[in-house]
Image (cartoon, rainbow, N blue to C red):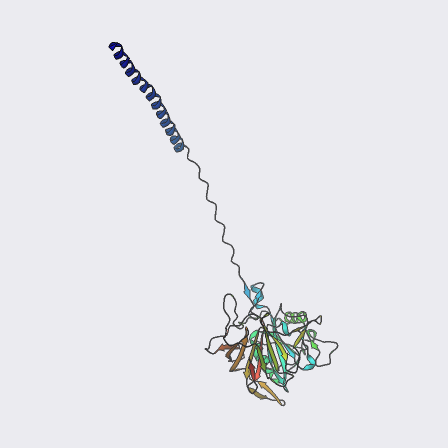
Length: 370
């Protein structure tokens, strides 16, 4: 029995040893196979690298957007060529019989001064593209208007004028004379109004006159404007009503600031809004974006009991924009230099885009605001 027991123990030991080997050998084979497979995969990856996708070409930089702004109005224009379109300055009457005028509200700049006997007159400045279909009544020119007009290189549209003004325009290099006396086809008498309050012109006729007389590009700097990131001159002094005692109540004016349109509604002291009518007889109140009162001296003019406003000088300026008042000064050193406006610190005033209405107010008269 003991011998059998020992044999059984030996048999069990032999079986355990060989069973272990039977288990170990397949596992080794499996591990070896796995290693071979991994090696094959690695070799396959090395032998056949994955092709990289080419990086896409970067999109070309977009063309920069270039904007152009009128030297006259500060408003955006369609292209570079529009900056130097021929300019036209038109003398427009302001006697009560001439109201409502036409084309005044379309001007980039309006100059206002006394022409004679306390009666004020306007010089409206346009460039081709802004000229309206009805402009007038056209009247005679005065010296100071011609002095203001020179820098615009504009055709000066007028119906005659004072001798000193005509001599300056006709015999001084750089002026463009568009007098009705020599260019009658550019003007006509409007039915329904009595002479001399019925002389008119329009965009079509002035453009034709410019072409026939060779009045080409007009190159001028213009007033500084709040464009292309440039900020306008501001003030802490609010001014929503303005009164200018230029002459009698028929020609003195007042303005009421309209915050919605950021403009100044113009009226005469004699009563009623100052209206402008278009070719279809639609009437709109004049409402400039900027209002300026230039305080000017006056000198006697030969040829009668007339006076001239002193346009080449320096003086006080009362400036209104954005519902604010700016105390400033004006300077024009010669007929060939720009009219300039500066604030109390001597810095050029930067105006918002749109129409600027400049009134030459005698120094003896009053300008007030609140």
